[in-house]
Image (cartoon, rainbow, N blue to C red; front, side, top):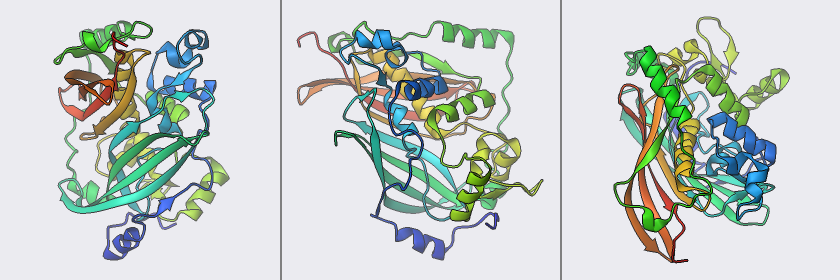
Length: 371
């Protein structure tokens, strides 16, 4: 456990390439293995999702499912498709996910998963110099042997020291708010619309329709801790378990240069000093967390009868403590394919500076009046 910030070398890259096409299965659970009432509720609380289909058993029993349903992004709590396996000591920035969902996630469903490194690309980055982009395919299977979802994730790998020295994001200004700005945010929370039991029929949707936006923020450490309580973490273990993990995975540790304390790189999401070690001016959100917010926007809009078939999101800019994120979307296409009534949605996350921090797209199946 050296803790020194590594750099990408030909030797490390060669070892990583040996993993291409190798299907990895876990030796022990990542976090959740079953969509229980409590686990679903914890996940929803971690992203601020108020949909009663997910958290109110009496409400859910009256739907076609007859029990609680988990939001599609609940699968992040089964396993994050966001982890740069291999090359210990080389920092990984989660950069995007492309989800395909095939089955609803119902209360009581249990899951297994696989992780396969499917591609590698080298490039030069303004932020960190030499980088490698890793692409992993994650599959999720339920207890009935059904493929529930598949995710293609990609993350950027770069040396921690190089990232700090480049300083691409050093000029990010911390957010400040006037009373009127905070009032607008709070009013948006109060007016959030959950479609729920009122079906959104395919025939009633037009290209160009805008989805009612939802807000997340101003981002606080509380929000990040709530996310971890619902979605879990590959690194966050206590005392002897943490030490044992770092011994088994040398290079995953990260030394705070100001204190000499050894800990995990995940603290970049919680501690200012850790984030600054890798060139970010302050602690920032989790990519999986922000993508789940976009999922929240879509499930609010589509109603209980809708089904999210695809969700793709690209993490383009950092969302640091204090930033406010507005999740927005608009319908770009509607069509019938293989008997399904589908709409495509362009979605995005936009901060208080007017910057798009995460562009995305989705495909939603809606009920039809003719069926």
